[in-house]
Image (cartoon, rainbow, N blue to C red; front, side, top):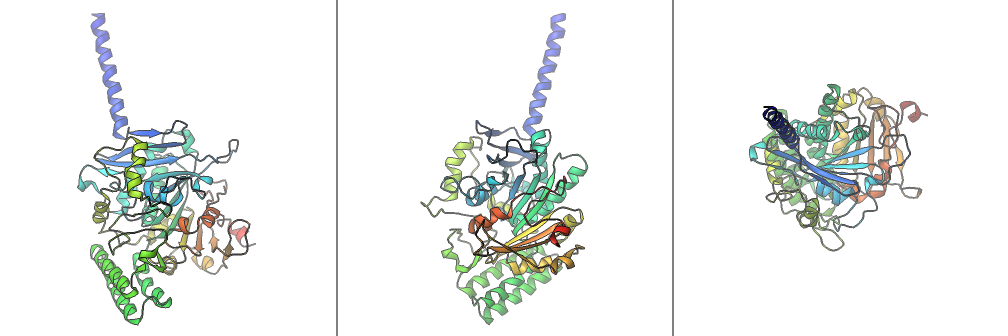
Length: 470
């Protein structure tokens, strides 16, 4: 009898353990990392059938005896459908380049780096069924918030590290919606995390303002003539009306038509650097589609020996990670990600930036001087539409020049800031600022701590109003 009771409770214990393990599996039990703990990676099932991949690098530069919290930068790529784990990591700012050689300008010098393949279906992330793709920026934000809960909650060391959300291109729309979703989860106690700030690099915050910038900008630099300008402006007006009528999918189609007009009128200008032809971009970002910004995932070929990112990610990196399912190809579902989001692609997110500012979150915008797709002219236009109380004062402040290190002989950019908003003009950079201007990018992300949990200062230029006005 005693043995039977013991066996009964043993069975109950086994079932409980099995149930616990099943719960762990449900939030993502596929994980790996290096032996020294400097890198960890894994999957989180953000929804049943929706598997999101993440990769965290611990910085070797973290001071061993400092009491100041060491920051973590979460990098969000654009597209939608561009892989942060692939392009942002190996193409722009991670510890290794596409040739798997050490990158001298890695942002690990300043912070830990967290790369996420979001939305699901991007990079190594995948969905079991196409109807599990997200269709809006908000849905994508909810998924990443679920991932952050799995990574941060219960990890005291990670909780103490303020998180700064950095974004590029379409990733900016993800960043502002994610920041709001994360803040809500923090306020309700569902997410144990300190949000340090949001940084929007060449970000697609207001599609209307960008499409209106293309024609005049290219006309001013002699890349198109009046005929091309008139065609461009006509389509931009059509897009403006479609956005006003909430016809966002139709606006996406017209946007594609406008890109074709720009390419035809300019003899193939590079949308990532208007000083070049698309075929001559030294960053070797290539695509066969004229709709370069979205419908095709980023491709990259190294300048050194011709390694392409697709081969690297589906070859040696896949072998290193060991947890990528055999049926999952890096970038294999990226086209589906964009197609699922066509109805949200042209939706503006200016109101979300305003909401972040009103909540006291540090918001920084930085833009490459020679970018076309998210031109500085368009960025300045949407900034002028902010309802933020400090806008008028900010607009009337003088800019401060930026240099690279101790060299004051060459201006690398400008910045100005007021309260919790800052803007960086990065000279000589196109769409991919960390690639084109790595030195000044590192200057930009120098981290200062203001001593406040939710108002940690991430950029050199974000100082208190009193100091700025001295």
